[in-house]
Length: 460
Image 1 (cartoon, one colour):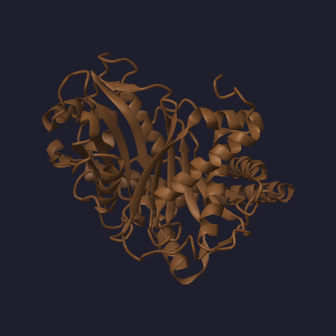
Image 2 (cartoon, rainbow, N blue to C red; image 1 turned 30 degrees about the vertical axis):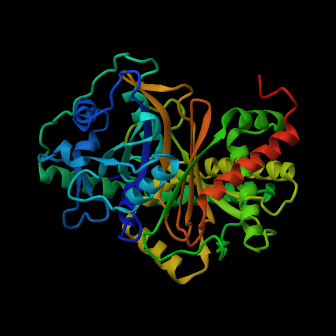
Protein backbone atom coordinates (compact mmCIF):
# COMPACT_ATOMS: atom_id res chain seq x y z
CA UNK A 1 0.00 0.00 0.00
CA UNK A 2 1.00 3.59 -0.46
CA UNK A 3 1.38 5.73 2.64
CA UNK A 4 -1.97 7.45 2.11
CA UNK A 5 -3.79 4.16 1.54
CA UNK A 6 -2.22 2.54 4.59
CA UNK A 7 -3.15 5.46 6.87
CA UNK A 8 -6.78 5.06 5.82
CA UNK A 9 -6.62 1.28 6.28
CA UNK A 10 -5.37 1.63 9.86
CA UNK A 11 -7.80 4.41 10.70
CA UNK A 12 -10.76 2.03 10.74
CA UNK A 13 -12.09 0.38 13.88
CA UNK A 14 -15.51 -0.81 15.03
CA UNK A 15 -16.55 2.75 15.92
CA UNK A 16 -15.06 4.34 12.78
CA UNK A 17 -16.19 2.67 9.55
CA UNK A 18 -13.87 3.83 6.79
CA UNK A 19 -15.92 2.95 3.72
CA UNK A 20 -17.53 5.55 1.50
CA UNK A 21 -20.86 5.23 -0.32
CA UNK A 22 -21.24 5.86 -4.06
CA UNK A 23 -24.83 5.80 -5.31
CA UNK A 24 -26.45 5.77 -8.73
CA UNK A 25 -30.22 6.22 -8.94
CA UNK A 26 -31.49 4.32 -11.99
CA UNK A 27 -34.49 4.86 -14.23
CA UNK A 28 -35.17 1.58 -16.09
CA UNK A 29 -38.40 2.83 -17.73
CA UNK A 30 -36.87 2.88 -21.23
CA UNK A 31 -36.39 -0.91 -21.11
CA UNK A 32 -39.79 -1.49 -19.52
CA UNK A 33 -38.64 -3.71 -16.66
CA UNK A 34 -36.44 -3.40 -13.56
CA UNK A 35 -32.82 -4.47 -13.30
CA UNK A 36 -32.35 -7.81 -11.54
CA UNK A 37 -29.45 -8.88 -9.35
CA UNK A 38 -28.43 -11.45 -11.98
CA UNK A 39 -28.28 -8.69 -14.61
CA UNK A 40 -26.23 -6.53 -12.26
CA UNK A 41 -23.74 -9.37 -11.83
CA UNK A 42 -23.56 -9.86 -15.61
CA UNK A 43 -22.88 -6.14 -16.07
CA UNK A 44 -20.29 -5.83 -13.32
CA UNK A 45 -18.26 -8.97 -14.06
CA UNK A 46 -16.86 -7.89 -17.45
CA UNK A 47 -15.88 -4.51 -15.99
CA UNK A 48 -13.99 -5.65 -12.89
CA UNK A 49 -10.72 -5.03 -14.70
CA UNK A 50 -11.40 -1.29 -14.54
CA UNK A 51 -10.26 -1.48 -10.91
CA UNK A 52 -7.70 -4.26 -10.36
CA UNK A 53 -8.06 -3.94 -6.59
CA UNK A 54 -11.70 -4.99 -6.93
CA UNK A 55 -10.50 -8.61 -7.16
CA UNK A 56 -7.66 -8.29 -4.65
CA UNK A 57 -7.56 -8.55 -0.87
CA UNK A 58 -5.32 -7.06 1.80
CA UNK A 59 -2.72 -9.16 3.60
CA UNK A 60 -0.23 -8.09 6.28
CA UNK A 61 2.59 -10.60 6.79
CA UNK A 62 4.73 -10.29 9.93
CA UNK A 63 6.93 -7.21 9.79
CA UNK A 64 4.79 -5.49 7.16
CA UNK A 65 1.67 -4.66 9.18
CA UNK A 66 2.25 -0.93 8.79
CA UNK A 67 2.02 -1.06 5.03
CA UNK A 68 0.16 -4.24 4.04
CA UNK A 69 -0.16 -5.61 0.52
CA UNK A 70 -2.84 -5.74 -2.15
CA UNK A 71 -2.64 -9.29 -3.52
CA UNK A 72 -4.75 -11.17 -6.05
CA UNK A 73 -7.48 -13.23 -4.41
CA UNK A 74 -7.64 -16.74 -5.94
CA UNK A 75 -10.97 -17.32 -4.18
CA UNK A 76 -12.61 -14.12 -5.42
CA UNK A 77 -16.39 -14.55 -5.71
CA UNK A 78 -18.35 -11.68 -7.26
CA UNK A 79 -21.61 -12.87 -5.69
CA UNK A 80 -20.14 -12.42 -2.21
CA UNK A 81 -20.00 -8.67 -2.94
CA UNK A 82 -23.58 -8.32 -4.21
CA UNK A 83 -26.91 -8.17 -2.41
CA UNK A 84 -30.31 -6.51 -2.79
CA UNK A 85 -32.75 -4.64 -0.59
CA UNK A 86 -36.35 -3.42 -0.85
CA UNK A 87 -37.53 -0.04 0.39
CA UNK A 88 -40.78 0.28 2.28
CA UNK A 89 -43.49 2.54 0.86
CA UNK A 90 -43.43 5.31 -0.30
CA UNK A 91 -39.85 4.67 -1.50
CA UNK A 92 -38.93 8.35 -1.33
CA UNK A 93 -35.67 10.17 -0.56
CA UNK A 94 -36.29 9.85 3.18
CA UNK A 95 -36.47 6.04 2.94
CA UNK A 96 -33.31 6.01 0.85
CA UNK A 97 -31.48 8.16 3.39
CA UNK A 98 -32.48 5.67 6.10
CA UNK A 99 -30.96 2.86 4.05
CA UNK A 100 -27.78 4.87 3.44
CA UNK A 101 -27.54 5.42 7.20
CA UNK A 102 -27.73 1.67 7.81
CA UNK A 103 -25.21 0.78 5.12
CA UNK A 104 -22.78 3.44 6.35
CA UNK A 105 -22.31 1.72 9.71
CA UNK A 106 -21.77 -1.90 8.59
CA UNK A 107 -17.99 -2.41 8.55
CA UNK A 108 -16.87 -4.29 5.44
CA UNK A 109 -15.31 -7.77 5.86
CA UNK A 110 -11.51 -7.76 5.67
CA UNK A 111 -11.11 -11.28 4.28
CA UNK A 112 -11.96 -10.14 0.74
CA UNK A 113 -11.67 -7.03 -1.41
CA UNK A 114 -13.26 -4.29 0.74
CA UNK A 115 -16.25 -3.30 -1.34
CA UNK A 116 -19.90 -4.31 -1.68
CA UNK A 117 -22.74 -3.43 -4.03
CA UNK A 118 -26.42 -3.31 -3.06
CA UNK A 119 -29.24 -3.22 -5.63
CA UNK A 120 -32.18 -1.32 -4.14
CA UNK A 121 -35.78 -1.87 -5.28
CA UNK A 122 -39.00 -0.05 -4.44
CA UNK A 123 -38.11 3.55 -5.21
CA UNK A 124 -40.98 5.81 -6.18
CA UNK A 125 -41.81 5.88 -9.89
CA UNK A 126 -40.31 2.46 -10.57
CA UNK A 127 -36.76 3.69 -10.09
CA UNK A 128 -33.93 1.66 -8.55
CA UNK A 129 -30.59 2.45 -6.97
CA UNK A 130 -27.20 0.82 -6.72
CA UNK A 131 -25.24 1.62 -3.56
CA UNK A 132 -21.54 0.83 -3.68
CA UNK A 133 -19.71 0.66 -0.36
CA UNK A 134 -15.96 0.87 -0.87
CA UNK A 135 -13.18 1.23 1.68
CA UNK A 136 -11.38 4.54 1.34
CA UNK A 137 -8.04 2.71 1.24
CA UNK A 138 -9.13 1.20 -2.08
CA UNK A 139 -10.10 4.41 -3.85
CA UNK A 140 -10.76 8.10 -3.27
CA UNK A 141 -13.59 10.23 -4.68
CA UNK A 142 -11.86 11.07 -7.94
CA UNK A 143 -10.97 7.44 -8.62
CA UNK A 144 -14.57 6.35 -7.95
CA UNK A 145 -15.90 9.04 -10.28
CA UNK A 146 -13.47 7.98 -13.02
CA UNK A 147 -14.68 4.38 -12.64
CA UNK A 148 -18.31 5.46 -12.99
CA UNK A 149 -17.52 7.49 -16.12
CA UNK A 150 -15.52 4.62 -17.66
CA UNK A 151 -18.31 2.11 -17.00
CA UNK A 152 -21.15 4.29 -18.34
CA UNK A 153 -21.88 6.17 -21.57
CA UNK A 154 -23.20 9.55 -22.65
CA UNK A 155 -25.87 8.07 -24.93
CA UNK A 156 -28.47 5.34 -24.32
CA UNK A 157 -27.66 1.94 -25.74
CA UNK A 158 -24.10 2.86 -26.65
CA UNK A 159 -21.46 0.21 -26.27
CA UNK A 160 -18.72 0.53 -23.68
CA UNK A 161 -15.32 -1.12 -23.70
CA UNK A 162 -15.29 -4.19 -21.49
CA UNK A 163 -12.51 -4.73 -18.97
CA UNK A 164 -12.56 -8.30 -17.66
CA UNK A 165 -10.41 -8.93 -14.61
CA UNK A 166 -6.96 -10.11 -15.62
CA UNK A 167 -5.14 -12.83 -13.72
CA UNK A 168 -1.47 -11.81 -13.75
CA UNK A 169 1.32 -14.33 -13.22
CA UNK A 170 1.57 -15.23 -9.54
CA UNK A 171 4.24 -13.18 -7.78
CA UNK A 172 6.12 -15.14 -5.15
CA UNK A 173 5.75 -14.15 -1.53
CA UNK A 174 9.52 -13.69 -1.28
CA UNK A 175 9.60 -11.29 -4.23
CA UNK A 176 6.75 -9.21 -2.79
CA UNK A 177 8.53 -8.90 0.55
CA UNK A 178 11.87 -8.04 -1.06
CA UNK A 179 10.25 -5.34 -3.21
CA UNK A 180 8.42 -3.92 -0.20
CA UNK A 181 11.60 -3.92 1.86
CA UNK A 182 13.46 -2.13 -0.93
CA UNK A 183 10.69 0.46 -1.12
CA UNK A 184 10.92 1.00 2.65
CA UNK A 185 14.70 1.38 2.44
CA UNK A 186 14.33 3.93 -0.34
CA UNK A 187 11.81 5.88 1.74
CA UNK A 188 14.07 6.00 4.78
CA UNK A 189 17.22 6.67 2.74
CA UNK A 190 15.40 9.64 1.26
CA UNK A 191 14.53 10.92 4.72
CA UNK A 192 17.28 13.56 4.64
CA UNK A 193 16.04 15.00 1.35
CA UNK A 194 12.47 14.83 2.64
CA UNK A 195 13.40 16.70 5.83
CA UNK A 196 15.13 19.38 3.75
CA UNK A 197 12.03 19.67 1.58
CA UNK A 198 9.81 19.93 4.66
CA UNK A 199 11.98 22.67 6.14
CA UNK A 200 12.13 24.56 2.84
CA UNK A 201 8.39 24.28 2.27
CA UNK A 202 7.81 25.31 5.88
CA UNK A 203 9.74 28.52 5.31
CA UNK A 204 7.84 29.19 2.10
CA UNK A 205 4.55 28.35 3.75
CA UNK A 206 5.33 30.64 6.71
CA UNK A 207 6.05 33.50 4.31
CA UNK A 208 2.83 32.81 2.39
CA UNK A 209 0.84 32.58 5.61
CA UNK A 210 2.26 35.91 6.82
CA UNK A 211 1.01 37.57 3.63
CA UNK A 212 -2.50 36.12 3.92
CA UNK A 213 -5.15 37.35 6.34
CA UNK A 214 -7.65 34.64 5.43
CA UNK A 215 -5.96 31.38 6.40
CA UNK A 216 -7.12 29.51 9.51
CA UNK A 217 -4.78 29.08 12.49
CA UNK A 218 -2.29 26.21 12.44
CA UNK A 219 -3.88 24.59 15.48
CA UNK A 220 -7.65 24.53 15.91
CA UNK A 221 -9.54 23.92 19.12
CA UNK A 222 -12.79 22.03 19.28
CA UNK A 223 -16.19 23.66 19.13
CA UNK A 224 -18.35 21.78 21.66
CA UNK A 225 -21.45 22.15 19.53
CA UNK A 226 -19.78 20.78 16.37
CA UNK A 227 -17.11 18.36 17.61
CA UNK A 228 -19.26 16.32 19.97
CA UNK A 229 -19.18 12.60 19.27
CA UNK A 230 -21.44 9.75 20.31
CA UNK A 231 -18.44 7.51 20.94
CA UNK A 232 -19.65 4.77 18.59
CA UNK A 233 -20.45 4.20 14.92
CA UNK A 234 -23.86 5.90 15.06
CA UNK A 235 -24.37 7.95 11.90
CA UNK A 236 -27.13 9.80 10.04
CA UNK A 237 -27.08 10.22 6.25
CA UNK A 238 -28.93 12.96 4.38
CA UNK A 239 -29.12 13.89 0.71
CA UNK A 240 -30.18 16.99 -1.15
CA UNK A 241 -29.42 19.04 -4.26
CA UNK A 242 -28.36 22.60 -4.99
CA UNK A 243 -28.76 24.49 -8.26
CA UNK A 244 -25.38 24.33 -10.01
CA UNK A 245 -26.42 27.12 -12.41
CA UNK A 246 -27.15 29.44 -9.50
CA UNK A 247 -23.81 28.61 -7.88
CA UNK A 248 -21.97 29.32 -11.11
CA UNK A 249 -23.84 32.60 -11.52
CA UNK A 250 -22.90 33.65 -7.99
CA UNK A 251 -19.29 32.68 -8.64
CA UNK A 252 -19.18 34.62 -11.91
CA UNK A 253 -20.80 37.71 -10.40
CA UNK A 254 -18.45 37.70 -7.40
CA UNK A 255 -15.29 36.68 -9.24
CA UNK A 256 -14.77 33.42 -7.41
CA UNK A 257 -15.00 29.68 -8.04
CA UNK A 258 -17.80 27.21 -7.44
CA UNK A 259 -15.66 25.78 -4.64
CA UNK A 260 -15.51 29.22 -3.01
CA UNK A 261 -19.28 29.59 -3.34
CA UNK A 262 -19.87 26.14 -1.84
CA UNK A 263 -17.81 26.93 1.23
CA UNK A 264 -19.56 30.27 1.61
CA UNK A 265 -22.84 28.35 1.68
CA UNK A 266 -21.38 26.08 4.35
CA UNK A 267 -20.27 29.11 6.36
CA UNK A 268 -23.78 30.56 6.21
CA UNK A 269 -25.36 27.24 7.16
CA UNK A 270 -22.95 26.86 10.10
CA UNK A 271 -23.81 30.37 11.27
CA UNK A 272 -27.54 29.61 11.15
CA UNK A 273 -26.98 26.26 12.89
CA UNK A 274 -24.98 27.81 15.72
CA UNK A 275 -27.49 30.61 16.17
CA UNK A 276 -30.35 28.11 16.37
CA UNK A 277 -28.52 26.32 19.19
CA UNK A 278 -27.87 29.54 21.07
CA UNK A 279 -24.14 29.29 20.34
CA UNK A 280 -22.16 32.43 19.54
CA UNK A 281 -21.17 32.28 15.84
CA UNK A 282 -18.56 35.04 16.28
CA UNK A 283 -15.61 32.62 16.11
CA UNK A 284 -14.84 31.38 12.57
CA UNK A 285 -15.01 27.62 12.09
CA UNK A 286 -12.42 25.61 10.18
CA UNK A 287 -13.21 23.25 7.36
CA UNK A 288 -10.90 20.89 5.52
CA UNK A 289 -11.18 19.54 1.99
CA UNK A 290 -9.00 17.28 -0.11
CA UNK A 291 -7.04 18.32 -3.18
CA UNK A 292 -6.31 15.61 -5.74
CA UNK A 293 -2.73 16.08 -6.86
CA UNK A 294 -3.54 14.35 -10.17
CA UNK A 295 -6.89 16.05 -10.88
CA UNK A 296 -6.19 17.48 -14.34
CA UNK A 297 -6.64 14.84 -17.02
CA UNK A 298 -6.44 11.97 -14.56
CA UNK A 299 -8.10 8.64 -15.36
CA UNK A 300 -6.91 6.94 -12.15
CA UNK A 301 -9.47 4.48 -10.77
CA UNK A 302 -7.89 3.26 -7.54
CA UNK A 303 -5.70 4.52 -4.72
CA UNK A 304 -5.57 7.87 -2.92
CA UNK A 305 -3.67 10.93 -4.12
CA UNK A 306 -5.33 13.41 -1.82
CA UNK A 307 -3.80 16.05 0.43
CA UNK A 308 -5.86 18.20 2.81
CA UNK A 309 -6.35 21.95 2.54
CA UNK A 310 -7.84 24.03 5.33
CA UNK A 311 -10.30 26.88 5.01
CA UNK A 312 -11.57 29.48 7.42
CA UNK A 313 -15.36 29.47 7.22
CA UNK A 314 -16.31 33.05 7.96
CA UNK A 315 -19.50 32.27 9.83
CA UNK A 316 -18.57 35.20 12.10
CA UNK A 317 -19.61 37.70 9.38
CA UNK A 318 -23.26 38.71 9.34
CA UNK A 319 -23.36 39.99 5.76
CA UNK A 320 -23.68 37.09 3.27
CA UNK A 321 -21.64 38.87 0.59
CA UNK A 322 -18.84 39.58 3.05
CA UNK A 323 -19.00 35.92 4.10
CA UNK A 324 -18.69 34.89 0.46
CA UNK A 325 -15.72 37.14 -0.28
CA UNK A 326 -13.75 36.20 2.83
CA UNK A 327 -14.50 32.45 2.72
CA UNK A 328 -13.76 32.20 -1.00
CA UNK A 329 -10.43 33.98 -0.51
CA UNK A 330 -9.58 31.57 2.31
CA UNK A 331 -10.32 28.63 -0.02
CA UNK A 332 -8.04 30.09 -2.66
CA UNK A 333 -5.24 30.73 -0.17
CA UNK A 334 -5.68 27.30 1.42
CA UNK A 335 -5.20 25.56 -1.93
CA UNK A 336 -2.19 27.70 -2.78
CA UNK A 337 -0.64 27.01 0.62
CA UNK A 338 -0.85 23.27 -0.02
CA UNK A 339 0.79 23.75 -3.41
CA UNK A 340 3.60 25.73 -1.79
CA UNK A 341 4.11 22.95 0.76
CA UNK A 342 4.01 20.27 -1.96
CA UNK A 343 1.02 18.17 -2.93
CA UNK A 344 3.01 14.94 -2.58
CA UNK A 345 4.24 15.72 0.91
CA UNK A 346 1.36 14.03 2.72
CA UNK A 347 1.88 10.70 0.97
CA UNK A 348 5.66 10.78 1.40
CA UNK A 349 5.40 11.48 5.11
CA UNK A 350 2.64 8.88 5.54
CA UNK A 351 4.83 6.20 3.98
CA UNK A 352 7.32 6.51 6.85
CA UNK A 353 4.90 5.23 9.47
CA UNK A 354 1.18 5.02 8.65
CA UNK A 355 0.31 2.91 11.69
CA UNK A 356 2.22 5.22 14.04
CA UNK A 357 0.52 8.25 12.52
CA UNK A 358 -2.85 6.80 13.43
CA UNK A 359 -1.76 6.01 16.96
CA UNK A 360 -0.66 9.62 17.43
CA UNK A 361 -3.93 10.84 15.92
CA UNK A 362 -5.98 8.75 18.34
CA UNK A 363 -3.98 9.98 21.32
CA UNK A 364 -4.37 13.59 20.25
CA UNK A 365 -8.11 13.37 19.61
CA UNK A 366 -8.85 11.49 22.84
CA UNK A 367 -6.70 13.47 25.26
CA UNK A 368 -6.52 17.03 23.91
CA UNK A 369 -8.88 19.71 22.68
CA UNK A 370 -7.02 19.89 19.39
CA UNK A 371 -8.91 19.14 16.18
CA UNK A 372 -7.85 19.20 12.52
CA UNK A 373 -11.09 21.04 11.76
CA UNK A 374 -14.70 21.42 12.72
CA UNK A 375 -16.09 19.74 9.60
CA UNK A 376 -14.89 18.09 6.40
CA UNK A 377 -16.04 18.86 2.87
CA UNK A 378 -15.40 17.47 -0.60
CA UNK A 379 -16.28 19.07 -3.92
CA UNK A 380 -15.86 16.85 -7.00
CA UNK A 381 -16.82 18.02 -10.52
CA UNK A 382 -18.81 15.21 -12.09
CA UNK A 383 -20.70 14.42 -15.29
CA UNK A 384 -22.07 17.46 -17.12
CA UNK A 385 -24.97 15.46 -18.62
CA UNK A 386 -26.88 12.32 -17.68
CA UNK A 387 -25.09 8.99 -18.05
CA UNK A 388 -26.37 5.59 -19.17
CA UNK A 389 -25.77 1.92 -18.49
CA UNK A 390 -27.01 0.45 -21.77
CA UNK A 391 -30.72 1.35 -21.90
CA UNK A 392 -30.92 2.25 -18.18
CA UNK A 393 -30.66 5.95 -17.37
CA UNK A 394 -28.62 7.19 -14.42
CA UNK A 395 -30.99 9.72 -12.94
CA UNK A 396 -28.71 10.81 -10.08
CA UNK A 397 -25.29 10.30 -8.55
CA UNK A 398 -24.53 10.83 -4.85
CA UNK A 399 -21.51 10.23 -2.69
CA UNK A 400 -20.92 9.98 1.06
CA UNK A 401 -17.56 10.05 2.80
CA UNK A 402 -16.69 8.82 6.27
CA UNK A 403 -16.90 10.53 9.65
CA UNK A 404 -13.75 10.44 11.78
CA UNK A 405 -13.93 11.93 15.27
CA UNK A 406 -13.59 14.78 16.19
CA UNK A 407 -14.54 16.10 12.73
CA UNK A 408 -18.01 14.57 13.01
CA UNK A 409 -19.62 16.32 10.03
CA UNK A 410 -18.67 15.31 6.49
CA UNK A 411 -20.31 16.99 3.51
CA UNK A 412 -19.56 15.55 0.06
CA UNK A 413 -20.76 17.34 -3.07
CA UNK A 414 -20.64 15.96 -6.61
CA UNK A 415 -21.99 17.85 -9.60
CA UNK A 416 -24.22 15.82 -11.90
CA UNK A 417 -26.31 16.93 -14.89
CA UNK A 418 -26.75 20.55 -13.75
CA UNK A 419 -27.15 19.82 -10.03
CA UNK A 420 -24.84 19.90 -7.05
CA UNK A 421 -25.79 16.72 -5.22
CA UNK A 422 -25.08 16.77 -1.50
CA UNK A 423 -24.31 13.73 0.62
CA UNK A 424 -24.08 14.69 4.29
CA UNK A 425 -22.85 12.08 6.80
CA UNK A 426 -22.81 13.07 10.47
CA UNK A 427 -22.53 11.85 14.00
CA UNK A 428 -25.92 12.93 15.40
CA UNK A 429 -24.25 14.18 18.58
CA UNK A 430 -22.62 16.87 16.43
CA UNK A 431 -25.49 17.57 14.00
CA UNK A 432 -28.84 16.08 15.05
CA UNK A 433 -30.73 17.19 11.93
CA UNK A 434 -28.55 17.00 8.79
CA UNK A 435 -31.58 17.46 6.50
CA UNK A 436 -32.17 20.86 8.11
CA UNK A 437 -28.52 21.73 7.49
CA UNK A 438 -28.95 21.01 3.77
CA UNK A 439 -31.99 23.28 3.79
CA UNK A 440 -29.79 25.99 5.29
CA UNK A 441 -27.36 25.57 2.39
CA UNK A 442 -30.21 26.21 -0.05
CA UNK A 443 -31.39 29.25 1.90
CA UNK A 444 -27.88 30.70 1.84
CA UNK A 445 -27.68 30.18 -1.93
CA UNK A 446 -30.94 32.10 -2.34
CA UNK A 447 -29.54 34.96 -0.25
CA UNK A 448 -26.36 35.17 -2.32
CA UNK A 449 -28.21 34.87 -5.62
CA UNK A 450 -30.48 37.78 -4.68
CA UNK A 451 -27.52 39.82 -3.44
CA UNK A 452 -24.97 39.47 -6.26
CA UNK A 453 -26.60 38.05 -9.40
CA UNK A 454 -28.24 40.53 -11.73
CA UNK A 455 -31.79 39.68 -12.89
CA UNK A 456 -31.84 37.39 -15.91
CA UNK A 457 -28.30 36.11 -15.42
CA UNK A 458 -29.48 32.68 -14.31
CA UNK A 459 -31.40 32.17 -17.55
CA UNK A 460 -28.20 32.54 -19.54
